[in-house]
Image (tube, rainbow, N blue to C red; front, top):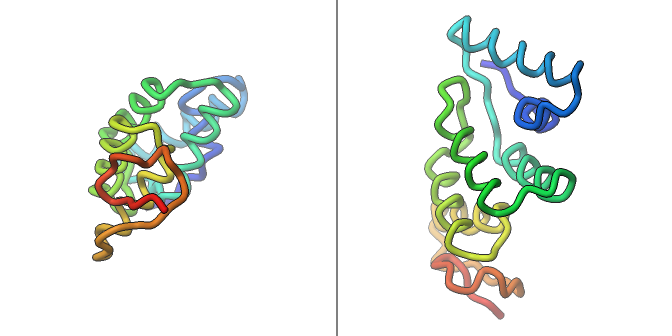
Length: 131
């Protein structure tokens, strides 16, 4: 298995740079063709969402669609797929950032009954308590 950095994933998703996008597509397709998995850790998934929103102007619906497509793609393996799915569900039902939703999901998986925050956008998420 080989790890994939967020910049490769961003190029693959956006296809915005002819040279780098082609290289990213080739790396991902070669791995798939060889039956190898590409590992995406949580930082990569958070950076993907941040870059797509801040640099490319993706809205929440578009971000959720991208995350879902990545999570269901056969060529990728994840640090903790269940927490990513939980984070995606929280992201869809709240105004919180994907990273915040992932923090709550990971903390819950670690046995935390709640995560204290000042971020009011997490209101309504089961894993958070707003101070």
